[in-house]
Image 1 (tube, rainbow, N blue to C red):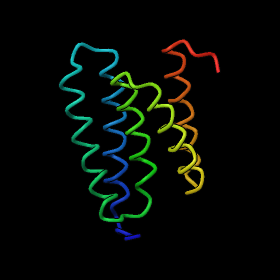
Image 2: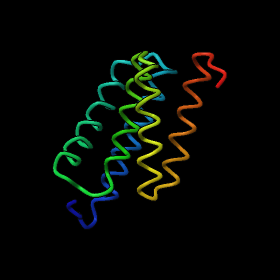
Image 3: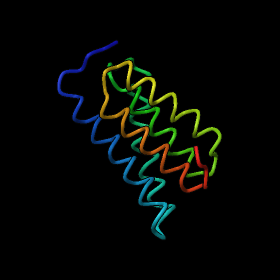
Image 4: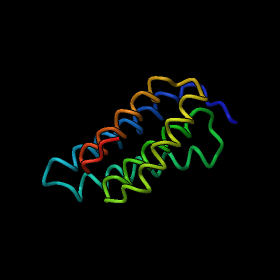
Length: 115
């Protein structure tokens, strides 16, 4: 785990940027452009995780779930959402855990799942 002083804000901005782009891509006609921006932010998060930066993995898992959901892979998305929920909770990021639960619920509602 590599702590980077002052980098949490940068990671959070990339996370929120990707999250917002995936959601906006679902509701606008600019799907391709928004997906490209989301992927660019996701790539940066992946680089931070590969370098071992502390407290970035749970963000990446939630974005991976959003990507899978956006691409229509609901089975894969379900698993990754659940991973993001567990990882966020274990890391003490209960606000991200709650967000991951909400995003999972939104996906289930979109596909008509009742559980």
